[in-house]
Amino acid sequence: MLLIKLQNYALRMKNKNNMNSQVVIIGAGIAGLCISFYLSKKNVPHIILERGEIANTWINERWQNFHLVNPNWAIKIPEFDFGTKYFPSKNPDGFLNKRQTIEYIKSFASYIESKIYINENVDLIVKEKDIYKVITSKRTIETDTVIVASGAFGEPYIPSINENLNKEIYQIHSSEYKNSENLPEGGVLVVGSGQSGAQIVEDLMDSGRKVWLAVSKCGRRPRNYRGKDSSWWNYKMGIFDKTVEEIPFKERWKGSAHTSGSKGGHDINLMDLAEKGLHLCSSVKNCSFQKIVFNNDLYENLKFSDNYAINWSKNVDDYILKTNLKMPFKRINQDNRINRTKIKSLKEISLSKSLKCLIWSTGFRYDFNWIKLDITDEKGIPIQKRGVTKYKGLYFMGLQWMHSAKSAQFIGVAEDAEFIVKDMIMKKII
Image 1 (tube, rainbow, N blue to C red):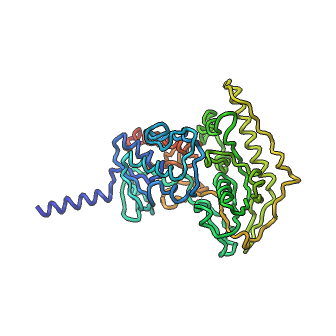
Image 2: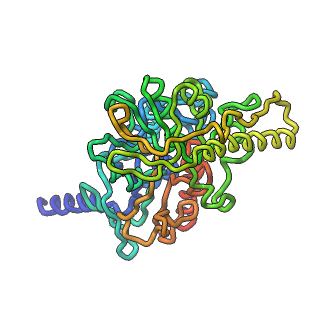
Image 3: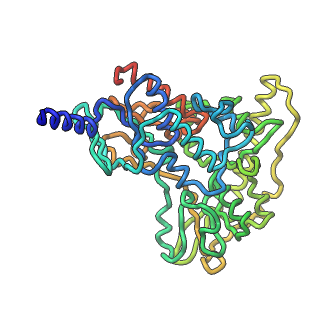
């Protein structure tokens, strides 16, 4: 009898560790949770492995005053979207802040009762015949189905020129910024004027900091235009639904046009911020021991930002005419402050007591070297079509531009999750 009990115990422990009958989801962000939701609807056994805690990226890689850029009505999570009793706001035109977003994701995890193992990092995935070995910081799991939902953007990227700077100079990536109080005293240079960079600049200025911004080639999007939020127009015009087949590669990987959901939602115009004391510079060319050297492209980059807003508004105007909508008249004209003879940039700036912090808002890069399969192209981007790879049972979820403009956003991530689960059923993977 004792021998039988020991054998049964050994079998249970083997199944617990191998779990080859269960789908393994990597990442307990909204992408991994949406996959879990649809798998649960089909009664498919699965687990989620999370390197930190639920909503880990939102907790650790967003600043204190962060707000979503799309309004509440654009959050379309199954059975948990705006209008349901679970949603943390009754205002369709409001914007969730960091705390609300984290609580929302955690509440969704509780609602779907996902089996989540937190603080368990996936170190390696190898494939042996038809089985994937998922090697974590705690164990090895064998399974025939893996869904990688480890993050939309990848790892923080800082150009290597930063290594030329004095090691005593305080440098962080935008994903590490929390608030002004966590920075050393003195001025701050933010490198990159995409959505994060522009919003961080505002946050720093609101705290009373002296701020410089190295302006990159990035558009700006009006918060409101002709009676509606700009996200509403993008939704109506089908911008969110544009797929990878419709948008050229270079267009897909540009920095997101800056606007803001904070303070109830508002425009971010760099020229307005300059009038309030922001020091605008060209993009960064190089670094030396205690010096930042700039290109000579400030005027061109500011002009690009302005033209982006104008062209966007013209597309809205055309849509209104085409659909016979009755909307209040408005026009966005060229900003006369952006004048080649008046826009001057520093050639270089020395880091001193008045400027001693750098925030690199320079984006992210994918790193999937821990998956020991041929699954990325020469740029390190996963080779997949709407999450489906050439390897049976291996999927990606929640990547930026995985399928469409909304693949990594609350407005579209669930659609991709539902598609992947249907693909798994069709191919009899689950």
